[in-house]
Length: 106
Image 1 (tube, one colour):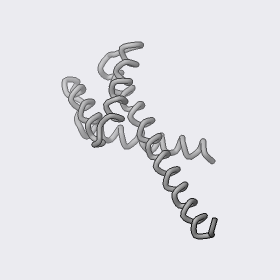
Image 2 (cartoon, one colour):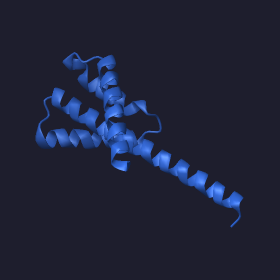
Image 3 (cartoon, rainbow, N blue to C red):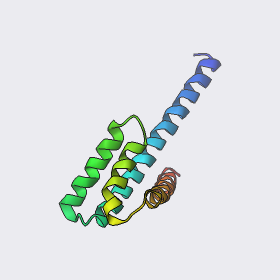
Image 4 (cartoon, rainbow, N blue to C red):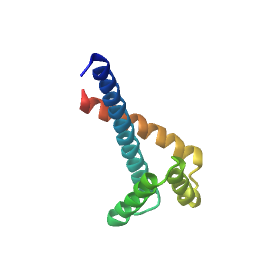
């Protein structure tokens, strides 16, 4: 293997690692957001866990990132929770998930 091949392999591995980390951060944040939403919707226990699983499945299956957020916004609209509130919480959960995973890797 030439040094160019080794360098190419290293870049590919780094890209794959970053892509995997971004996926894990997003899924952790979506899970936290769904838990937050379930609490506001008054879904305790298994109903809350089912809601979380549904939201996570929507997020994984969707090619666009805002489908799961849109579902949460729609679900919470009757509870007087605005889209801005949901997005602000998502930003907080993304930061929390990123810090958590970075700390775990370090």
